[in-house]
Image (cartoon, one colour):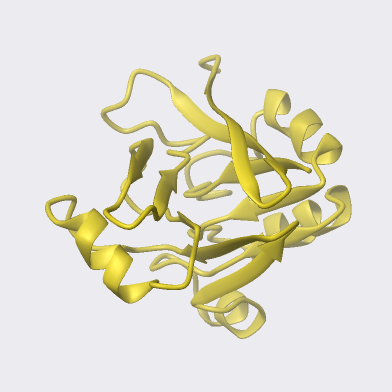
Length: 166
């Protein structure tokens, strides 16, 4: 099962659309995960239309329309892998311990908010992934997203992708 993970797209405030090099992986993925801060429901509609399966949550920059359509936390079983998605996890200090306590029954937690790619493991085995942002790199050298694969309940082939500058 092929995954694309993204967050903090901020369309149309930070970009008019997702970068072209991200649309092909979205269309090819079995599951697309978006960890919030869409900003406009038009992107949710476009990603829903162009992906096989979309799992998303709302973020702090998402208004009432998106909050009515998306949960604050999503939980899905992907081929035996328990995945949770949330926008904010709080400060980076203590994140692993805090998230492991909040999501004790989860294998992977996908989150956003910081625009900073993150890939760590909490005590007890919870994997924390933040794909960064494909449209607003902030202090990062590149805009980014993640891909991964799920095989028999295990997450494999996690890869950070840097997008070319517009």
